[in-house]
Image (cartoon, rainbow, N blue to C red; front, side, top):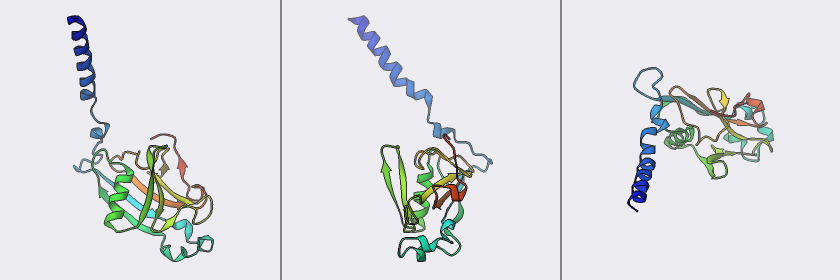
Length: 173
């Protein structure tokens, strides 16, 4: 009996300590330029709609900014472990830009339905919001993509499943 208890105690300690040495991957985010800060850029654009206003859902054409920028590119600081969605949500709330999303349990991420009152399907059945990091569409949702120092985030409206914005899809980060 004493031997069984010792065995259970050792197993318990092994499992309890197993997570201690692994650390959080977020803690390993490197300060790429040595300035002591983690920064990224973020922009939200709908340039594809500039010449397709006639195809938009009624009442949506006046929501499209003349230059296509709902949010001009800006540099923001973030904390290690934050996702694209964390930065997106923070910046858009600060700028009072309306957005809606759903938390998709099936994909373990959020899905952006609309930004600036422009929604998926407002310009046809293949339209909606996509995001890119460093010019590439990651193969994961925006709340599942952990940022690295220097990343460039772009949320862009597509009318053709990303083909019209040159959004290359990458299967993994």
